[in-house]
Image 1 (tube, rainbow, N blue to C red):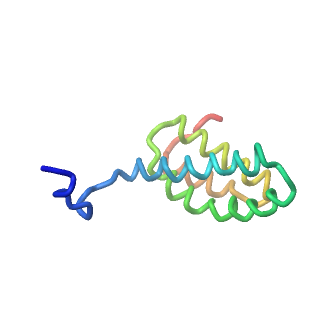
Image 2: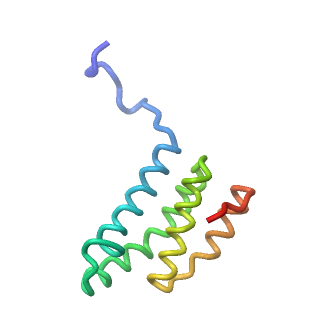
Length: 106
């Protein structure tokens, strides 16, 4: 069977893989543009909106994270979003901890 014979519409992707991609993209983009290299006023304002808009996709992705270290990174990132933007993320953190049925130490 060659790659041409594979029907890409029937390939199943793992929700964990997608969750990791969503979290990874969000965290690395924020570090590059807001928290890190390009820490300029115009970049700060431009990407503040992106951080706020990433909260819901991150919440959904977080429901599929199996690893406690990944969960801790995500919780730290949500805390950073709240600190940086003023947008409340603590309710999402509480909901995630209920879904995970544990408190992840940060």
